[in-house]
Length: 580
Image 1 (cartoon, one colour):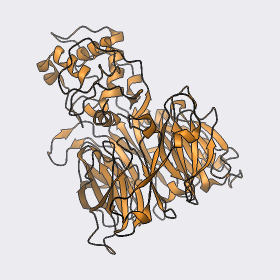
Image 2 (cartoon, rainbow, N blue to C red; image 1 turned 135 degrees about the horizontal axis):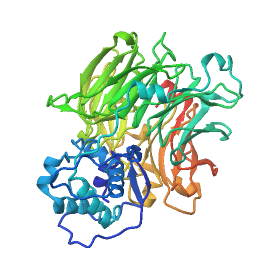
Image 3 (tube, one colour; image 1 turned 180 degrees about the vertical axis):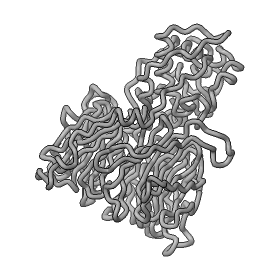
Image 4 (cartoon, rainbow, N blue to C red; image 1 turned 30 degrees about the vertical axis):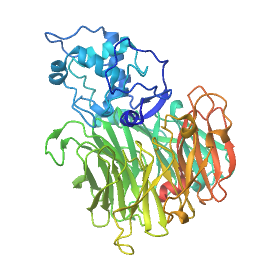
């Protein structure tokens, strides 16, 4: 699969081992990609686990057995819904409603699924990601009316809510010797767990069962509670003060989700938590001590520019403002950024800011006043002034599919404070000026474009004490590149063509089997070490590699049979304080 194809499928999530390649015995049209997908496949959702009935039959409907339908339903939700939408009404990909699919017909659908398109549709058949039988079933599936997953309202949320340890029964003081500020919460993706690892001793302090494929970890303003959310929309609230940290409350906020955050504004610390769902398209405000659901708000509504109704605008990144009692909520398909005022949730006030469609992830500038977020499928960065509550800028990142994570803040030797994002589809890194007072001529412009290892980057990382910018490339099809990291020296960015150092993280991990991919650097609290996940197949050895930030030399390798597919890592202090 080409990088351009792979970037589209990344919208449907992270990667797993894929089946052996099976060629489809048809003549390949010109200009259609046919590369292997680097032994990994996307898996964005847990919606495919739902057992849904075949929609009411109509004349002309193709014949499908229940087992074929369930298998096709799972494939669609895992591989297609991220681009084409749960209800098949289109998102970054085109609509696949029956008025369109029936007009095109079975053979067209079969060939399109098989060979893909140069515009970004993966070649599911010729790459070996789907067998000939699966392609045939998927073509028939798309001629049926879309399956509709169930809604998930207050009754379902309250039914799933578990208060395991009430606040009054929790410790009144910290009961362990863990240095919580230098603790790392590490996603063990395929195990449905997180590992809590000490940042000094590298010791695993606890393994905690969570939802499937935890997407992010967030820390309460006090630093006591760790909140994690799985792709299956299960939120765990973990008390780090307990003798052995454990879940004290949990709730399922839908069928699929990505984001959780807690209130940070002075006077509201730890008061509320918020989680956003992909399905149903909504967010819920919860009690910050218990996760009791208090208020659910749907995001269904009009696309900001066309003013057309969208039935499933997914909630992506959520951050907590440092300037107002507000949550900042990205709504993908409608292109709106919501400022949700939690000072009075019974009389909730929400400011809608029109930005750009397909909003994804982002982070604050170094002052924490401005929120920079990628509209990834549109190649743009939106800048929100969280103090004034308005859109400050909307600019091109000049690369293919920006994917910043939370981005990285640097003090550039020429342009002053800048924020960085890498790209999924090419090797570029965009540096954007973020200092409208000290460097007004550079503010909200791409001031420099760097070139790193190659396409397939997911995360960049730096630290206020560091002279380095790290750029990963875990989705690059080249095994050597995907197991390496590029490192730029910040004080040398004034050169005409800044060079980078390649760190062979995968080689340093000493893993003999599989094709491990290196992903998401995360600093310790002091900023003198950076940790990288060496992410391998679920049944193979993985590791975490610790690098000395000053010397760029290997410092330590963490290996443990419990480290199953480690991906995201979140240092408690840095995450709580938005240090990146």
